[in-house]
Image 1 (cartoon, each protein chain N blue to C red):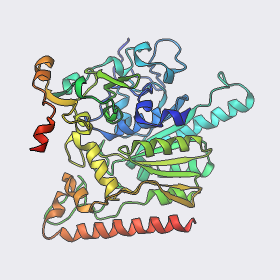
Image 2: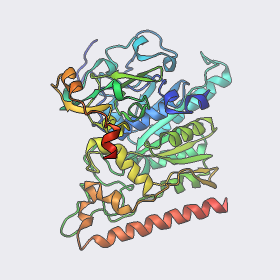
Image 3: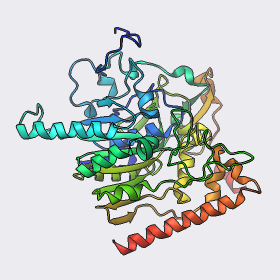
Length: 134
Length: 317
């Protein structure tokens, strides 16, 4: 890609988000698309994060609240299942954690450098029924 | 097909996104939640434009674009006219039989912030609605000029502290009431005018699809909670939006053909306006002894507006 400076920028420039013709984008999933370098998809904003959300599949009920309310298209849902988080585009706002309805939550915020396996091992456990009766 | 797609959230989540990440909107910005819900509401081709505002400057930072659809970068005032022009050209080419994909029916959508809608681009929008283009205008209403540093717009409500109406010893902040843009656009005789909020996704997507199915100009006023200028934590965007819709500060309704009004969301438990105001930093000065009367005035204003909407719905005028 040719990088033009601000003074070489021409009026009427067209940025193409895809390689070649792209006519039916709404029916092509992101992994099957041929993004160009002009598409912001090929850039990362991972360095904006101080905290990252981690996903615990065990508690997830696939309600998709995190998917609809994610402002950064970073919740990856395929075939009606939540399958993971796109850490290249997640800015770490924490909305997904707030809207998660399960107890304990299926998404929690952890410091950026936290190891995923360590985080999963210290995840809050589901409350047992006996404990509730007491 | 559309009904099936939005019957529930699981079905809706199979949509292939046409708005990309790594745009420069703040973490927790409601703008992109709204844009996603609008774009995912249809599988048709889209022709979009955005008036200058957060959405435009953050999604088209040269040499990158976040839009996977035809999108026009244009001035502050004329996002609506750019789309109207594209729509007029589409119609002309269709009449001449020169369309390359005649079986496709693209949707024309213009996005604008509240500054571009309520103030700067108002004349252009009014013109588009008067001419009756087959397009949709979506106003992302965050009640402030957030892109340029939080100056008040004519959408800023009474008592809000903005950078040009700061609250302090002398002033309690913004002194003018918010413009009733819904009534103004309905008065144009537009076939469909609706107010939406991103937290009520089903209501919102249904209204967007209704708008797409309507022939003629459609106006959508979408509440966009602004984490930076309303001063709340980024993770609370949806919670604040819930407070706004449940306290009736931002009632959800639609006006068809400029006359028939339908209220589309009635909260089960209406919460006091005080709770909505208290959750945001821009209203924190109202919770002092000398300004407390403003909160009661707010409540009275919201109650009166709700009463008026209900009367109008009953009257079917």
